[in-house]
Image (cartoon, rainbow, N blue to C red; front, side):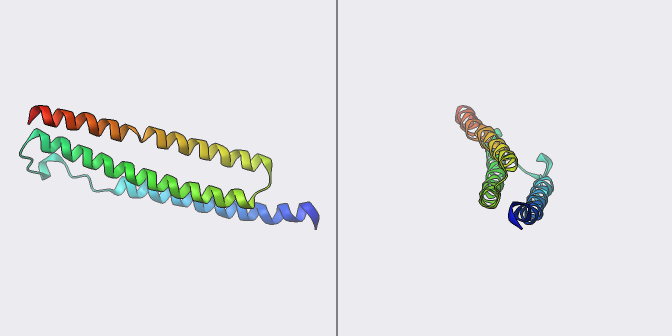
Length: 125
């Protein structure tokens, strides 16, 4: 079959892998959207400090979920790279990986935000 036969078998495999990746991303989005976010009325915060600490904890949890999902995506991309030889498809995988790096960088906001909120908590306590 030669090169053409290899391409015919790798393209369906690529489609299956990309479809699986898309379903995974959609599921993660749904799970994030479904996270129960109770309103402040549901809590009896004793102080502003407790409210700010709750914000830090919720942000930290969301950031960890995002980073875990992105790490799983990196593993899937590595698996796809091992199976794909087409330079155009590899370039697309590299772009997905680059977008993932951008997400990791954007998640650094949580650490900075947490530090600033903790300083506020100390100053108002």
